[in-house]
Image 1: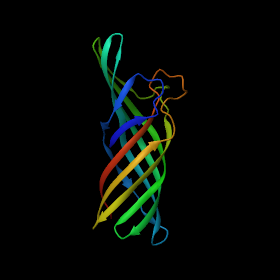
Image 2: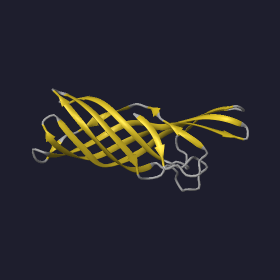
Image 3: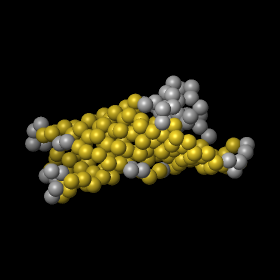
Image 4: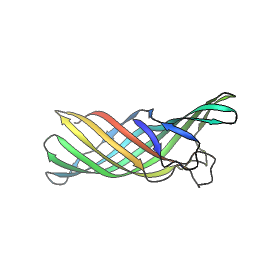
Length: 172
């Protein structure tokens, strides 16, 4: 995963890309020769790195959010070996870890069951799979539609996740 955020509101930081792990399983269900359905279950790390400044000086911040992603995708197969994927995605937040390094202090916290984070997030994905023999090379982009904060009043940054995923799989 190459993750970042968009649609930040009221935040005094500049978000940067963050690398994370993605892995899981998919099921390809043909409907016709050219159309199918592909549900997936993915363990996915998203988040961002940020830099900013306060009256105490400059700081670096890194957030890693681990999700169980369930994309439900329409398959469009224009030619043999290429599958275009598009559809909604449900994400369940499993864990969030924050690391803050500033000129005055450094803090690392794990916020697993915090009320300030939205657990259920809905999004949209689009991408393509390239089938070579029994191997599947996948490239997808995803955007959250739901915001990250639970009630809009949280002191946590408010944003939506965006992610680019590259995967290598084996079909059997």
